[in-house]
Image 1 (spheres, rainbow, N blue to C red):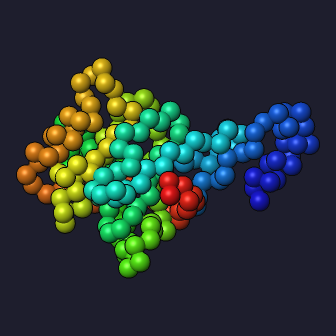
Image 2 (image 1 turned 30 degrees about the horizontal axis):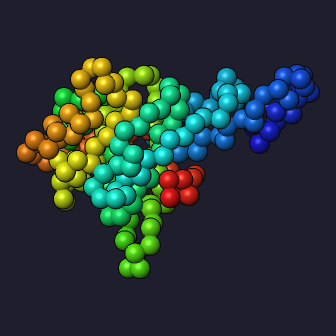
Image 3 (image 1 turned 90 degrees about the vertical axis):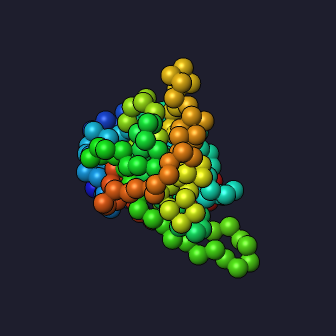
Length: 203
Ligand SMILES: [Cu+2]
């Protein structure tokens, strides 16, 4: 309603401007895990729709698909979760399978999903979204210890930089050398977890 009111108000005040703009992006979903990323303010009412990059956790084995994400600043990476029980956690490049030591690093929580007996593809009714805030690489892993997902290669990156030597292949190799268990943050943080707005995306 607020958006509609603003539209009407703006249409009355600046009719030419309104027709020239793209449709406003859908309002962010109401459950805000992190206060830092999803401000609903008049200043972002008029921005173009965000690009959403879908990553499916657990499709094709213990991996993220894709695990090498290229995403522009300001876009959204949206994680979808297949059976049985995956998660996504932000890590530092030098320490896979360990939560990045930062208050705003992300942790999705776990997404238990029952595997259908008929073999059909299913995913969690919820997703986890992160915003790409800058062009620095973002490293992540699945913290499921039953099956040692991170250590088995269930890791990924947003915007790796090949010229740095810090590549996904190197990160995956470091993860395979982790002897201990994977860690999690104390709570879901650093992104938004909620009802899947794109049920068909990636499937
Ligand atoms: Cu997993």
